Image (cartoon, rainbow, N blue to C red; front, top):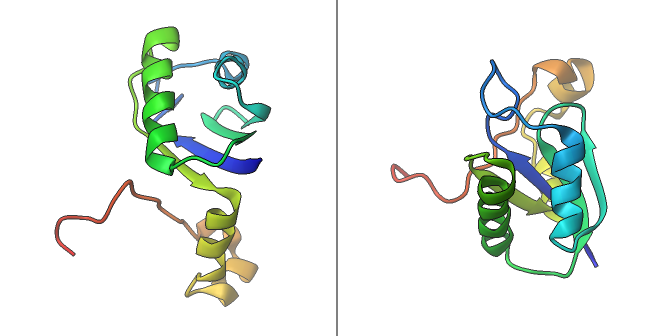
Length: 115
């Protein structure tokens, strides 16, 4: 089993994309994931599942959220190992230790067109 982190874009922000975390957890269970957890009201989902391409999981979650929760949003999935690797490459480790609330990591679905 692989641990995954799914980030649902703009969920429960400013009245947009409202979804209950219990409903989101149940969606993950219904999709066959295990150890399904949410974080606060963020729309972020952590779950275990068979190793699969991130893009495949993103599409599955986007479709299920749309069809079952009436939620149209982008989903970005990374493995827990991929998340840890990104954090390990942080170019600002001192700032992260001293003021972690002001350090932001952004994950994209692909390479931006301008790179």
